Image (cartoon, rainbow, N blue to C red; front, side, top):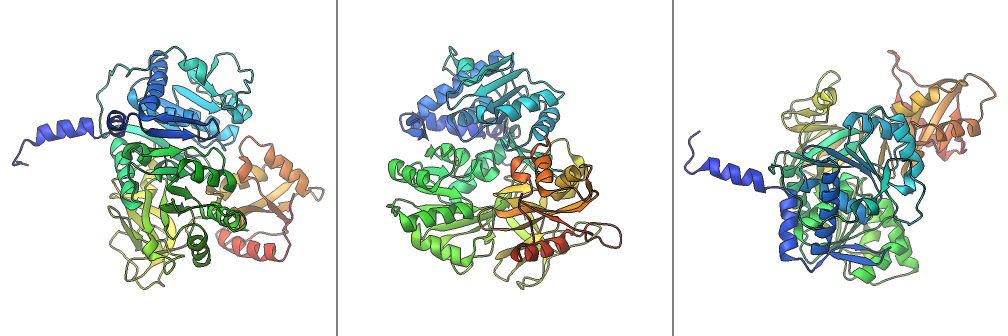
Length: 553
């Protein structure tokens, strides 16, 4: 195509400069003495200049140990200063930062290491046992293993490992020598999302995705350099990192308060002490905040907004939050792959509470027909009548790389012509407001974590006293859903306690995935073709829970 201007020059400059780390460095230059990161537990604040200097020390240390362009730095860390540095430093080397769920089991972490083959692996000493068991199980051995001893307990490290503070000691705080060309299309962050077997799928995010995800949050809150944010969820989540977490806050020039572990009291203490203007968390966290505010009220007048995500915001809860916390409640709906894609703003609430809102500014969300043998075409829309159900699909190429890492099958299944197929079932009305009704698949969402029945069923069925089992979710006021396992015993001596111990000791089952309820039954619901009918079981489980028929370990 013939352009009316020098498009080649524009592309060259734009492609090399439109990176997230370039935005951060602009803030280092213009807001160098202003707060960037606040750690309440250590009672320490980093200015932009100080945070950049510490990130450079880590970058120079990683480079000295062979980490460079395209290498992966995998880390399983709680929200902490070290998490922030691990997000920043690899980007200065052209490497890929990859925050992973610290709740994964040793077997799941080993699978992650073997799939992504990180050059460096960094873990929090709070998961010392799990991390080192994973290192025993994995075939790929990272060249550099770093332990973050946040609590100062100094456990004895296996040979070849090094503590984070010892690694960076003595390294220069200046910018590392650049031996790569920045590229807006280069992968910069890799997140994990659960797969049908529980193994996290790799979600690559390039610089365009990171910058425009930051822009999306900045635009929708809206967020300014004067804001102080605190995300009450783990940063390894897309919502933790991108919704008022490090990505938008450090890009816009605001300050980010670290909340390592959620508690309502700690949250309110930070709000008062540091002048937090935006809080971000799941509805169950907001319930805890509201309950504490009723008993021990604090001044929340400085809060500009509270953003919730992960599950629908019900009308009664919304009204309660608006009364007790702030009238400015927001709710986002989306996925790890695409960030949030529809949004409820304060002017939508409480009228539209329970819905997922309307499409975000740069996105498009549709509800299309559902077929057993194929994905619907994006133009095959269901009526916008608020009644007819279909599959929710999303178009947000600004916030997704439109694929998974080394997983062509799942990429073909979930992406088509730039659209992401969620497998969520929903309806929409004539105004474009979306309501989510459930899932085409059978995923359980517990405390914001995705749990797939197939993984647990496989593990439980390996128990010698189990003939067959099915796993489903049951309502839980504080967790969203809890796991219930229905088991057909092969041996009458099997007990709930024995089965629970078996699950808890498995390298393949994270603690949060362990069943909270059990039922021993004579048969399970299958259809005529032999497929498990999880929908039927879920309906039964809800009734059984209400009737007190499910057993606790």
